[in-house]
Image (tube, rainbow, N blue to C red; front, side, top):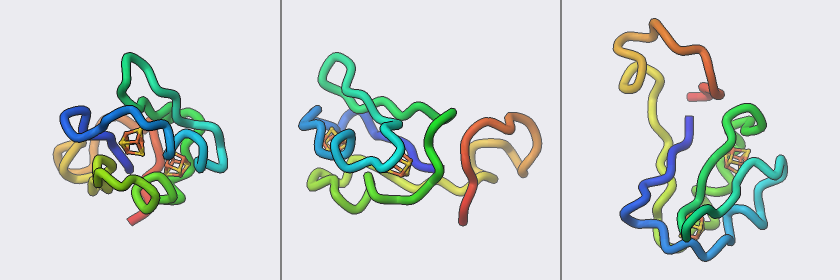
Length: 75
Ligand code: SF4
Ligand code: SF4
């Protein structure tokens, strides 16, 4: 899944504008992804000039793939 590193995000909103699913909003100058809408297309990571969006493997967040099913998990 894709996550925003808040420390790198400057809240420019480019990712929100380019997201085909309108899954990103900018809150308090930080991009926030709505995982109910995100389909893991990767566009936000490509367009972010600050490289603030990262693709994170499922195993790193779920401790071996168990647990939370929320979000998309394309590898
Ligand atoms: S494009 Fe990058 S810096 Fe701009 S709002 Fe999105 S994540 Fe933040
Ligand atoms: S991965 Fe695609 S669908 Fe998900 S937030 Fe980024 S641009 Fe939107």
